[in-house]
Length: 71
Image (cartoon, one colour):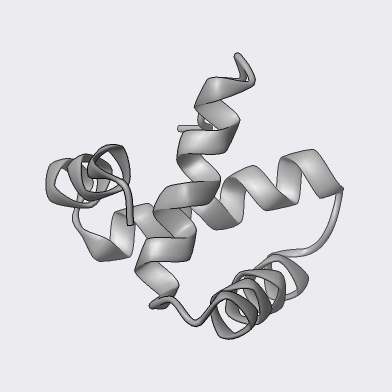
């Protein structure tokens, strides 16, 4: 996990990070909340990371692409 990912988790808290990552996936992939959550879980499992760490990485990637995180 990068230090930026850790900063996001510390700033927002794990639940908020997961919620925002789901919002990002819903917006960028045009999927339902359930589908976005499943994508997050699959990413976590495939990368051998905790769900919150995968979520933080998704948020960081969205911010890095110039997209604002929803909310």
